[in-house]
Image (cartoon, helix red, strand yellow):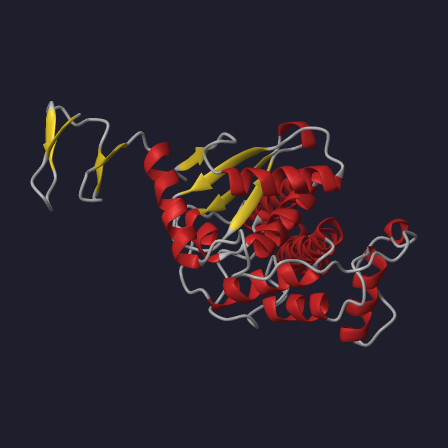
Length: 333
């Protein structure tokens, strides 16, 4: 995927946000942090347990999100680590794959391996019953993988709701994630390195159709527009507040947050800085910050000319000197 692992001094803003969410979630170990050099807007978490976890975010998302929005996204991904969703979805994938394989081999055996026994049975008068059994078995083998996939997708969508609720709890500010999801929903680029096996761990489905409403029973994520409405309907920042907002939107008594998590008290929503206030970077500054980080992580040497031009020297550059294309000054490499 071309992901680059960062240290605290590589991207302090991102590292500090991940550290804040790590503390808020109660994780004991800081996850590794990676930046994917891709203009698409997305992020994901990986690792079978909290002690071997990583969080990755695209350079495109780093450029687009302010600090509050970045906190919301990182809180969502840290929740996947905290709740062991990576391990859960991996186990679900194994079960799903096993069902698909058994159904495939079973159908081939019934079609090709049972031909001789059907002929011998039909000669003894029992062929009609065996044909009925064969048809029922084939229907079951066709439908079993389909239902298994639908269950897999339903589990994935439920874990996404829980991750959104956890992000609101960790940040105490549901609007941060809601605003980030709006930007993600409006984006059109698709992550080049995505694959279907890891799709449930992304903040949004990397294979979704364009727009915020696209979702169906075969999607790993709920519709982005629905997730935004739930977050903005929250009266507080607790699991119970999220569950109430979910039930209000769906018009039923069935919630989405596990019952054990609903006992916690209501958490008030905090007032945070808005973009443009002191200390907050605008989009141009974030783009420059992210670009500088990616150059450094790719081992490019940066030479600043007296005229203000920044010369990016690749690691395989062999010449002893380089000339500034703007003012003509020569610099030693």
